[in-house]
Image (cartoon, rainbow, N blue to C red):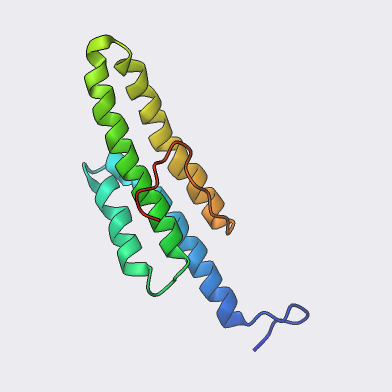
Length: 126
């Protein structure tokens, strides 16, 4: 079955919508850690691992989010040590803001079908 004029099958469009939705959930699931401790680290990785075979485009988003989690943890640990030099306090504030802003931006872009790499993320998984 095809939509009139577009030549895109309804099945393909539904799969694309599912991919966009799950990619958005993947990014926004980072925020779960604010409600349940450690959920912001565990839930995105579970979503990625469960959905990456069913929806291959999710793999890119999962790598982006996982790389951010690892990068954020490194930045957090370094900032904790820098607290003794006072510079760590502003670093921790910035990290907190970025850990809210990046998933929201990533989720919105994923819902629009875009892939957005979080700035300042070290790419451990390619």
